[in-house]
Image 1 (spheres, rainbow, N blue to C red):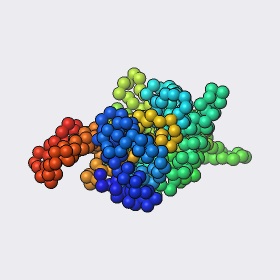
Image 2 (image 1 turned 180 degrees about the vertical axis):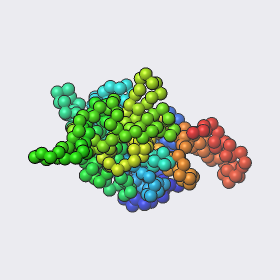
Image 3 (image 1 turned 60 degrees about the vertical axis):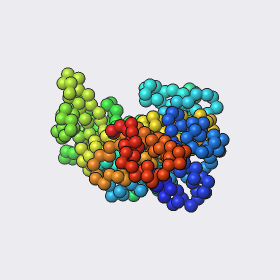
Length: 407
């Protein structure tokens, strides 16, 4: 991919040996079959296992690389949002850096392993996400049963990561979408301090109050502020917005309320799923932007899920969970390389799409095509064939895409 060499040329701090290694590494990860380990990588490229291990211990400015990949394909004037989420990485052993108890969404419980905190930028209209920064969550004191301050310790790390990467996301971003775990005062205060509007999910029993909008009674004392407690299962005082266009069984209700624990006025949107009339289900979304259109708020929160596809594709195809090392620098290099490879594949695929329609992308097809290309190049080299004649043949494209699936 020419995009790799172009970006590395823009980073003068990267020395030539590392620049050459990274170009080979990304292509090899896309082409190999099986787990992304040092030994398996050495089977598909000219670098030995020892050289690969040595290069993985070298430092590299990964956030800058992620940023440059992202800016090559994303239009700064597009509808972009910032998202943050964490992903669980299973890991055995006792001496691995960062090993602790983290929540595993697949098992719906806390398990022993590693956790990656990831910032990503999502193009809402194209429905695609790009990794901006990834860091390993330290277990800290929250890994022990004696310390019950898990939320505070880890929330401080998430907040600090967001603050440290402030200069890297596009200037036009106004909204930061996170799931319900991040709906805590210290985190939302940091988001607002960074001049972003958080969009998050609230509990069904969130302590909220209606704002009083009536006339001030003729009495001494300050004006009345609140007008009763909010019950998200009883919505007669909410404004009805109709249904979602693509899902008519989902009804929308909205109101501006005061959240007691967050100490903020929020625009709240309640989505009620009436597909089963006897058992309606609801989700409560909220934002600090009181003027934000409710349908747009729902669209932004749905777009937040694109970061989950980054975790899925990198675990299935680029070896995010395959690192066998215990050292902190090697783990960091491996995690960033896996997500950077996915970024590069998405960027190269997105460059061929000019329309602002949703991006259709298949990492499985990319892996298959890269494997076919490397195998054909190997045949050309070993059999001393003319590459120009082979690649200009009418059947070359069919062989290059052999086994690729539709997205």
